[in-house]
Amino acid sequence: MKINKGITKNLVNMINIVIDKNSKISKKIYERKVGQMTHKIYATIVLIAIVSIVAIPPMFTLFSITKYGVNVPYWDEWQLVPLLEKSFEGKLTFSDLFSQHNEHRLLFPYVCMLTIAKITKYNVVDEMYFSWILSIITFLFIYKIYEKDLKSSIFHLVMFIPVSFLFFTPMQFENIFMGWQIQYYLAVLGVVTSIYFLSYADKVAGFNFLMAMICATVASFSVINGLLIWIIGFLIILVKDANKKPLLLAWIIAGVGTNLIYFYGWSKPSYHPKIGFDIVYFFVSIGSPLSWGKTSSLYIGAILLFIYMIVIVFLVKYRRTKDNVIWICLIAFSVLTSVMLTLGRSGFGVDQALSSRYIIYTLLGIIGVYAILINTIKKDKKYKYVCVVIMALLMIGMFFNYARGIDIEASLHNDRIITADNLYNYRNVSDDRLKLHMFSVAKTIREGAHILEYRKLSVFSDSR
Image (cartoon, rainbow, N blue to C red; front, side, top):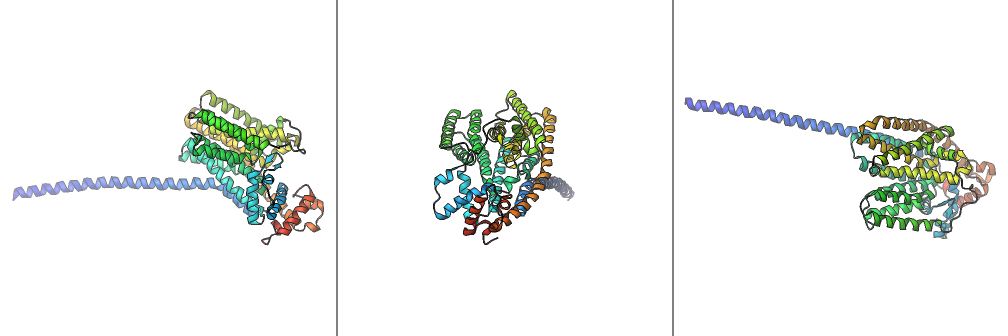
């Protein structure tokens, strides 16, 4: 009995020890799980906060369209009215869609605008919403490129926030509040998506290469500087390793063919100035996204161009061009667009370089150099102070521009309200008043207004 009692006591002690150990182990497991869960909740909250901040600029743009957008044709939008009438009469032809407007072939923008116009009774505000959707898609592709290049982390998500504020800057108010600017949004979307798919392309018959050529074609037949994508694409393929020669050959053939089709029957607009290169116009064009006037644009443009050159020389010297080729391409597209604008438009005067509609092109170069700076910090900490200083200067210029852009939006809204009333009463309004904030030729407005009134479109629609 004594032995049995001793054994029983020992067993009880062993069981207690096991239970105690298990409780400690269970407690540790519980604490670890709680810690992991807390970390996940914290990470989720941080992620939601970052995404919410990134979403502020595009949502603000959407709010601005809703608040300030006015359903009245403005300037070049009057060129669509005769085509719209032809479509109602069943007389619209491919040559009409392919016809030259200024320097451009607006094949794809015409298709989009005419389709929207027929669905919405030519409500240009709906065209603005469509442009906003195009800008969102473009922005998402820029993020996909950013994510692919820099990998996703909380740090890189936070560093992406300024890209959103820059891309959706209200200083591009002409694009935001003019349905006709679908052409610019389509061109930029085509360029960005073509670059994206080319970065994955490895064979001529592959999906990515086919998509890259389709997107490049859309860019080419949206605005003339969309043709630059064939040069930019050549650069991307040249830097790539796999199947370089077949891709290069196919891209060159497609690019040459597109250019031949584009310039068949093309002629320089007679009302445009002679081709020339004004260096002041060029610098102002580059600096316009971060400035608030001609003088500031001139200096900022010169500084930006210097930064572009220094950054690219640095990448070439330290053999980092392959890692940053996509961002180099965005810089190249931006600068080459400014070159094209200077050659074709500098005769209109330097003030024309400040046109807000061009900012959608020139800001791509700033996004490109910004991403390169982040990439540089990621790979080599010793350059972080230089990069941070440059990035800070970019952000200061951007936020100064925001306040100015918001003020202009409200003023523009008031002008368009007056324009809409004048158009609605076009039969009783003088030519000078009719042309105010609308178009330079009163006859074009009156003829177009008659079509809109007859078809119950725009300000004459039942939804007015």
